[in-house]
Length: 157
Image (tube, rainbow, N blue to C red; front, top):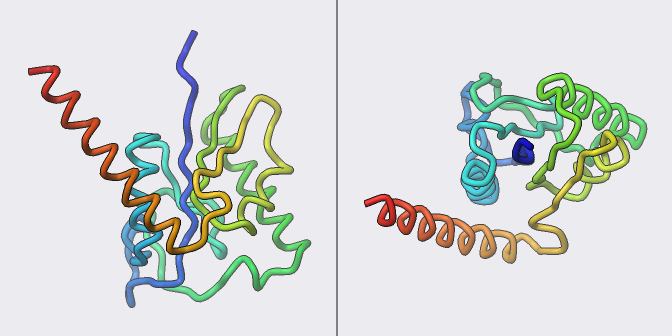
C-alpha cells in the first residue's frame, strides 16, 4: 500500500514584489512565507499557490504582480474558480486518495471543499485562528519541524 499523497496549498497574499517572480517568491507577507515553509516541510514538492487571479500555480511559474482578492469575485465566480482548481489538482496528481493541506482563508476553503473528489480530504491547519494566531502557530510549527529535522539528522549519525 502506498503512502497517502499530501498536497500543500498556500493562499496568495496581498504583499508582493513590485516585479514578476516565481509564485513561490512573489508573495512577501509573513503569513505566506510561514505557510509556504510549513507546507513544504509537510508535503515536499507537492506544494502550490492558490491565486485569486491565476487559480492553482506551481511555485516555479513566474507571475506579474496583481491586485485581486477572492472576496472581490462574485459567489458564482468563486464557484467556477474552485471547480477549475480542483479539476487541475485531479489532472496533475491522478490519484484516488489525497490529503489537501490548505493554508488559506475561508473564501478559498469554501470554494474548494464542495468540489473535493471522493477519497480526497481537506485539512485546514489554520482554521479558526486570527492573523496573529496564525503567525504564531506557523512560527511554532516551523520550530518543531526544524527540531524534528535536527533529531533525524543526529539519529542518522
